[in-house]
Length: 255
Image (tube, rainbow, N blue to C red; front, side, top):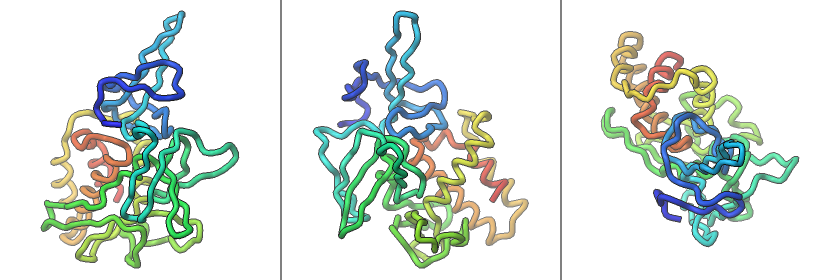
């Protein structure tokens, strides 16, 4: 289904249509059940019952069911993924292979070479390639696995048989970050700073503050981390890039 349609019908939802509008506050997506921490355009049910109570069903665009249930091919894992407009079976833990977090709601599923994959809708649409233009045009590629060490967690726990995470690896071989580490950092930020979110962008302010506290190598690494984190967090949570300045300031302090 094409994104940005002004109205959509979602099978299974009792009220139709859902209308595209700006969310006024953070919300839990009614599809994937993930917290959307910064308001943005989403599909919203504005139905009111006889008592005037609003439905309050939100659906962010990544969770809009594809047309006719047609699968899409994800080249990274060489797999056709099918959208499942349903929650995981009760009592069964389902983990996203991209970020390592539990799947709570709607998801994509597929299999390749005998291996099954489950993905959050946002994680299924992570960028295969990211370019950091501020530090010599460094290019990161999304990979299912790598032998390099994640600069965030130093690979602690990554050798466990239960560990799952895709990774972003720079083509120069100097930088590597687990998607799971980024998601974990975003979750922590949400818990600590979620009530202080601002919609005004001050991203440029963080750089000078960081430079006063770090050595040259640390500065370069941190700035790359911040920019890459911003890109991935925007994709995972569906946040417009211009609205993530609170995250930039926060990660600069805790890294």
